[in-house]
Amino acid sequence: MASSASPATGPSEEFRYPGNRLGLPEDGSGSVGTWGRRLLALLIDWLLAGLIASALTGRPMWAGGNNYSLMHTTAFFAMSAILVGLAGSTIGHRLFGLRVAPVRDSQTYAGPPGLLAGIIRTLLICLLIPAVIFDRERRGLHDLAAKTIVVRR
Image 1 (tube, rainbow, N blue to C red):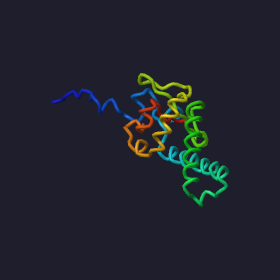
Image 2 (image 1 turned 90 degrees about the vertical axis):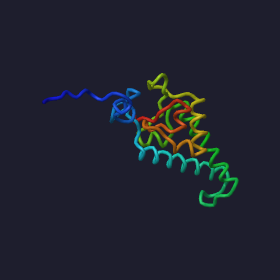
Image 3 (image 1 turned 60 degrees about the horizontal axis):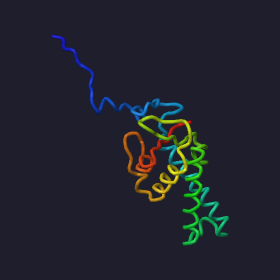
């Protein structure tokens, strides 16, 4: 007695890998960036912002302090918002082969997301909580609010 199984449909079939619902490839160029690359890129950007803050405050990174912390966060915000908004990636993203792509109507586009998206995305990253709450597409609340996704170059 043979039975024919019909393919599964619904939400579980729709999601096969991060990015497939947006038309992105499973791996290689244009696929969703991995957590490791994204975390390393964030670390590089945070360290670069620390170096900028050290140069502006005249204090070493390890000394800390209220003025240094505010300058560090301000440098990170300015650097990330401008570079993501206008160039599509930060220095850390470029070093690890990533870029931030705009998402409109469930499709990704090649150009930079725009300054407003860069500002929204970076502001929410600075708040931290939106960056650690994410969906199956590996898009954090910061990416959802800015209508962006991090993909491989």
